[in-house]
Image (cartoon, rainbow, N blue to C red; front, side, top):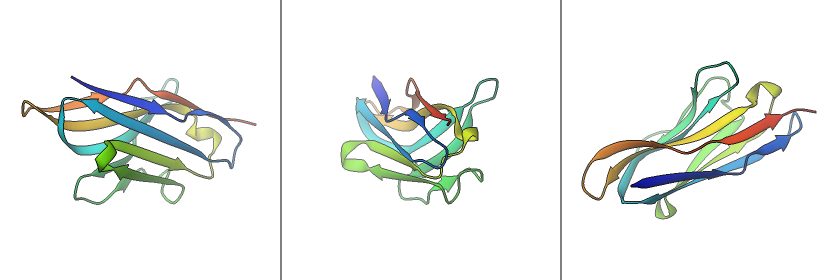
Length: 120
């Protein structure tokens, strides 16, 4: 069993910044990919940024240059620094991880989500 827990969401004014964190815990042997997705009301869930182990980061075009993803592998933690936030960034942000478990299964997990609201 693996759990992902996000933190750091909230209400921020346009142009402001927030930093999201996600910690993975449980029966983890290693984590192939960690990343962030978001879902706005009435919209489908979309990729925001991903950080594969040993690979390069990947960003949605809408957040390039404003959002930055980082990982602390020792802590099984991924971060999302969000700058110059816009109202259209308002969504529930979900942490995602593709995990190799201690019994050698490769499984995908999602966090419960954290709300980010950008509004004046």
